[in-house]
Amino acid sequence: MKIMFNKPVPSPAATRERAPHVRLTGLCAGYPGRPVLHQLSAEIPGLAITALVGPNGSGKSTLLGALAGVIRPTSGELLRTGDLPPAFVPQRGAVGDTLPLTVRQTVQMGRWGERGPWRRLTRRDRAAVDTALDRLGIADLAARQLGELSGGQRQRALIAQGLAQESDLLLLDEPTTGLDPEARERIGALLTALVADGVTVVQATHDLEAARAADACLLLQDGRLAGQGHPDHVLTTSALARIWQAL
Image (spheres, rainbow, N blue to C red):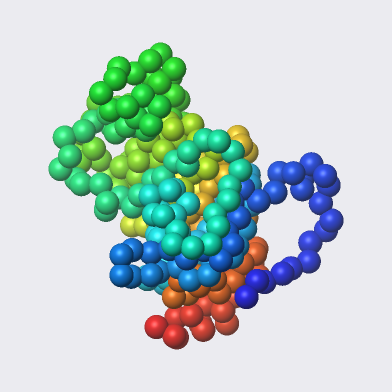
């Protein structure tokens, strides 16, 4: 079901800004022997924050994987604008605490797509890393081991790694889960600033406050689209109750 809502007629400039960055048509995807997404048709607006919302097992992470190109759709279409590969930031739990990496080394991994893991970084690569560290406010932590950081600091390091890729599409899997309110607010402000700089952001989240602050929302249930549109119109009490009561 696609939820429509009335808005003032936008100017031509606003229409260009919110043109779809990604269009999904009948998308099916999953894992060997385990289909997850079923006939998903949706649009993700450009230069906006889109929240993917739904209970565990609804297909949020699978959809992010398909958008990132790490999960191959089994049928349907996934079309997106731009030539740059997406930047994908996984959940904090997907990155081991014991990896012997400094914060700078972690962020430098974001340049491997351009340079490869064994080639020396160029001046441009180092500038991109420095910019990402500064943007996330963690330049002073560059020499610290990743495992020594607090949850909020570690999440900012991972987002900095995604930012260092200089993509126009940033994909985040539960970026604020387990963080304190100050850390969640800092990351929310950063994502808003990135959109102003020309980045399209898609985040899977269980944080309804973060989802309601987004520009658009896709509500998923059992791998199917249960709602699409502005969070105020999608994340209603009745819609959320229907989904969670079905579990």
